[in-house]
Length: 339
Image (cartoon, rainbow, N blue to C red):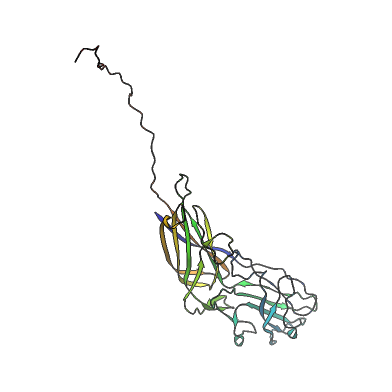
């Protein structure tokens, strides 16, 4: 009897901390950090791969809470790499003013309406997949009071605003020790449908809103060998008590969605060949109210295995009852009288 199970497991929240570095000059400089990732074919931006971001910044004068908030950066492009200097347009260089208070925000891959800023910083970040995975990052650095000298770089610890998902499949069939052909699975054409393609992130509330319809389908490919980096890699043979991950991880807009998960699961008997196909399961399951949290990676865990197979056992043969009982039976022969 085939049993198929599905579960959603939270893998990790991708956020971390970073110690700021001291800038020896009075120009405003930047520093960054983003979280690590888990798979070779992965759409996430990491500390090693981030190359640019956009900055909004304001200053407010000399401890006066009633002083006007003055924008100093409006979607300023900053470029560089970790371990090197981050730079922006030299003509736009801004300098610390001792005693002033500063607030900064930074965005990667989001769209900000600069006509709807709140106190000079983004209120809403719009995101559209546009048919490709783009990791959406946000960071801020607030209430920084400038010193007369030795101001640190403005350090951004970016958070992932999206969710991330990957599929794993495990063949739960007990390992065969009788010499019979093994039960082998291949899992192909994994999909999630019913996802939003675009939405807006409310910075102040820290929530997603304004989903524009759940019409997006994300394709995760096949179950392939661990660490496989070829995006077109073929499905592997998942043998008894073994598992593997999908070709792709995808970035998903957080929120609560009604989704459908589907894939094709083919069972082979001993050898992966057309004449050894035992069963083909066109698997599909709807999950209502699937809640995805920002900055969290999810593992959709598929499990299938043959259980309750017909088996035989033989008890010890019962011993004979008094197997050698003497019986006085005349022996037929010419020396014996006829009966």
